[in-house]
Length: 196
Image (tube, rainbow, N blue to C red; front, side):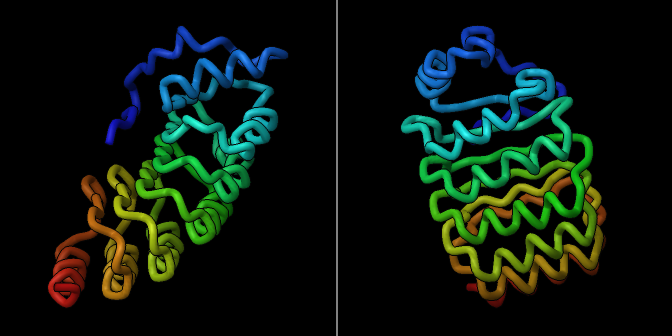
Protein backbone atom coordinates (compact mmCIF):
# COMPACT_ATOMS: atom_id res chain seq x y z
CA UNK A 1 0.00 0.00 0.00
CA UNK A 2 1.43 3.34 -0.99
CA UNK A 3 0.64 6.22 1.28
CA UNK A 4 2.00 9.70 1.60
CA UNK A 5 3.69 10.32 4.93
CA UNK A 6 3.63 13.72 6.54
CA UNK A 7 6.28 15.91 5.02
CA UNK A 8 6.34 14.05 1.69
CA UNK A 9 5.28 16.02 -1.34
CA UNK A 10 2.82 14.32 -3.64
CA UNK A 11 3.17 15.29 -7.27
CA UNK A 12 -0.24 16.36 -8.44
CA UNK A 13 1.09 19.00 -10.82
CA UNK A 14 -0.48 17.11 -13.73
CA UNK A 15 -3.90 17.35 -12.08
CA UNK A 16 -5.74 20.56 -12.91
CA UNK A 17 -6.81 22.58 -9.90
CA UNK A 18 -10.52 22.17 -9.31
CA UNK A 19 -12.62 24.93 -10.74
CA UNK A 20 -15.47 24.91 -13.19
CA UNK A 21 -13.81 22.10 -15.16
CA UNK A 22 -14.61 19.19 -12.86
CA UNK A 23 -14.79 16.76 -15.78
CA UNK A 24 -11.14 17.48 -16.61
CA UNK A 25 -10.20 17.13 -12.97
CA UNK A 26 -12.09 13.85 -12.67
CA UNK A 27 -10.38 12.36 -15.72
CA UNK A 28 -6.91 13.44 -14.57
CA UNK A 29 -7.33 11.99 -11.09
CA UNK A 30 -9.00 8.75 -12.02
CA UNK A 31 -6.37 7.95 -14.63
CA UNK A 32 -3.90 7.44 -11.80
CA UNK A 33 -6.42 5.83 -9.43
CA UNK A 34 -5.04 7.82 -6.48
CA UNK A 35 -5.86 11.24 -5.13
CA UNK A 36 -3.50 13.10 -2.78
CA UNK A 37 -5.05 16.11 -1.11
CA UNK A 38 -3.16 18.64 0.94
CA UNK A 39 -4.80 21.45 2.86
CA UNK A 40 -4.26 24.06 0.19
CA UNK A 41 -5.18 21.89 -2.81
CA UNK A 42 -8.91 22.54 -2.63
CA UNK A 43 -9.25 25.50 -0.30
CA UNK A 44 -12.88 26.63 -0.55
CA UNK A 45 -14.06 23.82 -2.81
CA UNK A 46 -14.11 20.97 -0.28
CA UNK A 47 -17.91 20.62 -0.56
CA UNK A 48 -17.68 20.25 -4.31
CA UNK A 49 -14.95 17.63 -3.88
CA UNK A 50 -17.16 15.72 -1.42
CA UNK A 51 -20.05 15.75 -3.89
CA UNK A 52 -17.74 14.47 -6.63
CA UNK A 53 -16.47 11.65 -4.37
CA UNK A 54 -20.06 10.61 -3.65
CA UNK A 55 -20.46 9.79 -7.36
CA UNK A 56 -17.88 7.00 -6.89
CA UNK A 57 -15.53 7.91 -9.74
CA UNK A 58 -14.84 4.63 -11.52
CA UNK A 59 -11.07 4.42 -11.27
CA UNK A 60 -10.44 6.20 -7.98
CA UNK A 61 -9.26 3.57 -5.49
CA UNK A 62 -7.07 5.48 -3.03
CA UNK A 63 -7.35 8.87 -1.35
CA UNK A 64 -4.74 10.42 0.94
CA UNK A 65 -5.44 13.54 3.00
CA UNK A 66 -2.33 15.17 4.41
CA UNK A 67 -0.45 18.34 5.23
CA UNK A 68 -2.48 21.38 6.13
CA UNK A 69 -5.82 19.59 5.78
CA UNK A 70 -8.10 20.66 8.61
CA UNK A 71 -10.25 18.34 10.71
CA UNK A 72 -13.41 20.17 9.60
CA UNK A 73 -12.52 19.48 5.95
CA UNK A 74 -12.05 15.79 6.68
CA UNK A 75 -15.47 15.88 8.33
CA UNK A 76 -17.02 17.19 5.12
CA UNK A 77 -15.48 14.33 3.14
CA UNK A 78 -16.64 11.61 5.55
CA UNK A 79 -20.18 11.57 4.13
CA UNK A 80 -18.67 10.78 0.73
CA UNK A 81 -16.67 7.92 2.25
CA UNK A 82 -19.92 6.38 3.50
CA UNK A 83 -21.46 6.08 0.04
CA UNK A 84 -18.45 5.74 -2.25
CA UNK A 85 -18.38 2.23 -3.69
CA UNK A 86 -14.98 2.32 -5.39
CA UNK A 87 -12.49 3.48 -2.75
CA UNK A 88 -10.43 0.67 -1.24
CA UNK A 89 -7.83 2.76 0.61
CA UNK A 90 -8.09 5.93 2.70
CA UNK A 91 -5.10 7.55 4.42
CA UNK A 92 -5.54 10.55 6.71
CA UNK A 93 -2.24 12.06 7.79
CA UNK A 94 -2.98 15.35 9.50
CA UNK A 95 -1.81 17.10 12.66
CA UNK A 96 -4.97 16.80 14.71
CA UNK A 97 -8.51 15.49 14.31
CA UNK A 98 -11.67 16.24 16.27
CA UNK A 99 -13.36 13.45 18.22
CA UNK A 100 -16.62 14.07 16.33
CA UNK A 101 -14.80 13.45 13.04
CA UNK A 102 -13.35 10.20 14.41
CA UNK A 103 -16.89 9.12 15.30
CA UNK A 104 -18.07 10.00 11.79
CA UNK A 105 -15.14 8.07 10.27
CA UNK A 106 -16.10 5.13 12.46
CA UNK A 107 -19.64 5.25 11.09
CA UNK A 108 -18.26 5.36 7.55
CA UNK A 109 -16.16 2.25 8.26
CA UNK A 110 -19.28 0.48 9.51
CA UNK A 111 -21.31 1.11 6.35
CA UNK A 112 -18.70 1.16 3.59
CA UNK A 113 -18.16 -2.32 2.14
CA UNK A 114 -15.28 -1.62 -0.24
CA UNK A 115 -12.62 -0.15 2.05
CA UNK A 116 -9.87 -2.64 2.82
CA UNK A 117 -7.17 -0.29 4.09
CA UNK A 118 -7.49 2.64 6.49
CA UNK A 119 -4.61 4.78 7.76
CA UNK A 120 -5.22 7.39 10.45
CA UNK A 121 -2.31 9.37 11.79
CA UNK A 122 -3.90 12.43 13.32
CA UNK A 123 -2.88 12.53 16.97
CA UNK A 124 -5.80 10.39 18.12
CA UNK A 125 -5.69 9.21 21.70
CA UNK A 126 -7.38 6.46 23.65
CA UNK A 127 -10.89 7.80 23.08
CA UNK A 128 -10.44 7.74 19.30
CA UNK A 129 -8.86 4.27 19.39
CA UNK A 130 -11.77 3.02 21.48
CA UNK A 131 -14.30 4.30 18.95
CA UNK A 132 -12.38 2.62 16.12
CA UNK A 133 -12.02 -0.55 18.20
CA UNK A 134 -15.78 -0.84 18.58
CA UNK A 135 -16.08 -0.37 14.82
CA UNK A 136 -13.70 -3.27 14.21
CA UNK A 137 -16.07 -5.55 16.08
CA UNK A 138 -18.58 -5.30 13.21
CA UNK A 139 -16.46 -4.35 10.18
CA UNK A 140 -16.00 -7.28 7.80
CA UNK A 141 -13.97 -5.74 4.95
CA UNK A 142 -11.05 -3.86 6.51
CA UNK A 143 -7.86 -5.93 6.26
CA UNK A 144 -5.34 -3.20 7.17
CA UNK A 145 -5.65 -0.63 9.94
CA UNK A 146 -2.66 1.66 10.43
CA UNK A 147 -2.91 3.80 13.55
CA UNK A 148 0.80 4.53 13.81
CA UNK A 149 2.10 7.92 14.96
CA UNK A 150 -0.76 8.76 17.29
CA UNK A 151 -1.19 9.15 21.04
CA UNK A 152 -2.86 5.82 21.77
CA UNK A 153 -2.22 4.48 25.25
CA UNK A 154 -3.01 1.30 27.14
CA UNK A 155 -6.80 1.82 27.23
CA UNK A 156 -6.99 2.30 23.46
CA UNK A 157 -4.77 -0.72 22.82
CA UNK A 158 -6.90 -2.92 25.08
CA UNK A 159 -10.09 -1.89 23.28
CA UNK A 160 -8.45 -2.74 19.97
CA UNK A 161 -7.35 -6.08 21.45
CA UNK A 162 -10.95 -6.91 22.40
CA UNK A 163 -12.06 -6.09 18.86
CA UNK A 164 -9.39 -8.38 17.41
CA UNK A 165 -10.95 -11.29 19.27
CA UNK A 166 -14.12 -11.06 17.17
CA UNK A 167 -12.93 -9.42 13.95
CA UNK A 168 -12.16 -12.05 11.31
CA UNK A 169 -11.11 -9.77 8.45
CA UNK A 170 -8.27 -7.65 9.86
CA UNK A 171 -4.83 -8.96 8.92
CA UNK A 172 -2.60 -5.98 9.73
CA UNK A 173 -2.80 -3.58 12.67
CA UNK A 174 0.02 -1.02 12.95
CA UNK A 175 0.38 0.79 16.27
CA UNK A 176 3.97 1.92 15.82
CA UNK A 177 4.94 5.14 17.62
CA UNK A 178 2.15 5.12 20.19
CA UNK A 179 2.29 4.78 23.97
CA UNK A 180 0.55 1.41 24.38
CA UNK A 181 3.05 0.21 26.98
CA UNK A 182 3.66 -3.35 28.11
CA UNK A 183 0.06 -3.88 29.24
CA UNK A 184 -1.31 -2.78 25.86
CA UNK A 185 1.18 -4.94 23.98
CA UNK A 186 0.36 -7.98 26.14
CA UNK A 187 -3.37 -7.43 25.63
CA UNK A 188 -2.88 -7.33 21.87
CA UNK A 189 -0.62 -10.41 21.92
CA UNK A 190 -3.19 -12.39 23.94
CA UNK A 191 -5.95 -11.37 21.53
CA UNK A 192 -3.89 -12.52 18.57
CA UNK A 193 -3.12 -15.86 20.24
CA UNK A 194 -6.83 -16.44 20.87
CA UNK A 195 -7.54 -15.66 17.23
CA UNK A 196 -5.37 -18.53 16.00
